[in-house]
Every structure is written in C-alpha cells, then in structure tokens.
Image 1: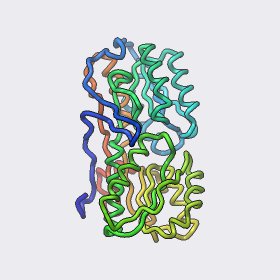
Image 2: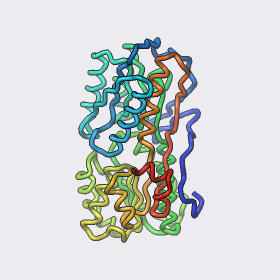
Image 3: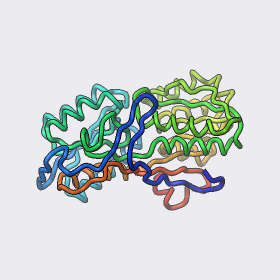
Image 4: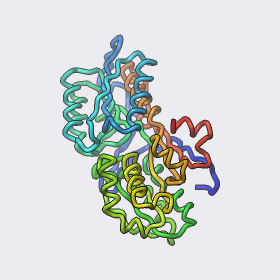
Length: 335
C-alpha cells in the first residue's frame, strides 16, 4: 500500500479462480451457459431465501438491507432467515434443507463452513433450486454446484489490514493475530492475507497466531483476555471480523491497553467507529455488505430470467482511518 493513500478500494480481482486457504484446494470459476444448474422458471414474484451466517451482527443487518433493496427492484419476495449464532452449522444446514422442502425459487447462502454446506447446496441443485454463495466461499464449483459467488476478496482485505498495521508500526515490532473460528473460509482468507503482508516485513515478528475468538463478542473478549500476556508484549493487533474486533476492544479497554497498542480490525459497527474516532482503534477494513446482499439477489433473479451471470464478483472493501472517515465514499460504508 502506498504511504499516505487515504483509502483503498479493492477492485474486482477474481477472474479465474477462488483460492481457498492452504489445504482447502481451488474452486475454479468459469463462464457457464445459462441453465446449467436449472431451467429458469420465471414466476411473477419469485421467493428467494437469503441465509446469512448469523443475524445479530451489524454486518448481517446491512446485508439484509441490500438483499431487500434488490428484492424491491427486481420484484422478488425476500425471505431472510439465519442461525442466531455464527457457529451453529447444524441450524444453517437445517435451514437450507427446510427451504428446499418448501420449494423456494432460489437460495442465497453465506456458508458457515467451507465443507459442511456443500451437501445441502448440491441437494438444492438436484431439486432445480439455483443457489448463489455470498460472503464466504464453498468447496464446490460455480456453474456446476451453484450459480455464482458474490463477496469481498477476503485475502486482499486481510493483506490491506496487515499493510496498514505494518505502516503504523514503521515496519518493526511484534504483533498478535486473534483468529475468528475454524471452518470460516472468509476469515481464513483474511488471516492468510494478513500474515502474508506481515511476512514481507522482516523486522515484524508474529508472537501469537493460534488463538480463536469464537462466534460472539463475549467469547472473543474471553479469548483476548486469555492471551493478555502476549498482548502486553505486542506492538500491534489484528482481528478479522466484527465480533473478534469488538471483543478484543472490550478486553483492551478492561485492561487499560486501549489506544496504547496499534489495533487494526475488520468490519464496522457503531462501537467500532466510535473507537476509531477516539484512537482506540487505528484502522478498520470495511466491506460493502449492502452491495453484497444486493448482488446476490440480483444474480439469482437474472439467472432465473435466463440472462448471463458473471460467476464471480468482488463486492469491494476499503481501509477506514481517522483521517479519511469523513470522506463521502468512506462515510457511506460506515453509516
């Protein structure tokens, strides 16, 4: 990242493949003829089930707003339903199965687990119900197992966070990474991108990268407090999603460390934006969840109409700092 650049928008950069974290393999995205997954079956007002990873975080409420906007624009009925907690794989699988049995016209899904949701998605395909994957990738092929993928380029987002933290540290010091949870492809990729960015700076040492925050802010705070000895030794911290960032912030505030260690997080919410203003957080990599929800629903509607759908679209992300947060294009992402 160029020093002094006020903000960075991650442009569409996935044209040929989605590469998962090490050991997960490659998901190849190729242009496929319309109707490969299912014969389009237009109805006057198609029912589209949108299933997020969870329903409590601010991020998902923004995704819902985008999905509903697309529903209004394209005359589709949006059914929004997801697990209460972002670690309830069984409930998310049950929701997919429920909507298949109900015979919805299409499904947009943010998989909680890179592998566990493959079976349910293929079951939808067998029932001629098209699926678009959003937010987090799946161990399956666009155009064969599902229609398309709409998400942030998460590895680039993590790299952006790592580069900003390295800049704040002047390229030297020690850092800690508090991961999110096992099986989450989006945050796995952010963590991978962060570590790659830090590895480019030989004078920065990662002193802890094997702790997981868990699905909630409370769990993340507990995880952060359990690694407080490492945090006290660190010059910088990175967290890869809203709940891990919020939990870390609470732990730092409790221990009197907020603002004393450079802290870059991911996603935004009113408490995180407030902490950015106060100097307790030094940067947030912020996605465009409204656009993500909108693009997922739009892709399903266009597919059902028999129109060509791009297999992969990067919905973008930006680095937000105290210096650029009032710029109109940035302000729109954090309000």
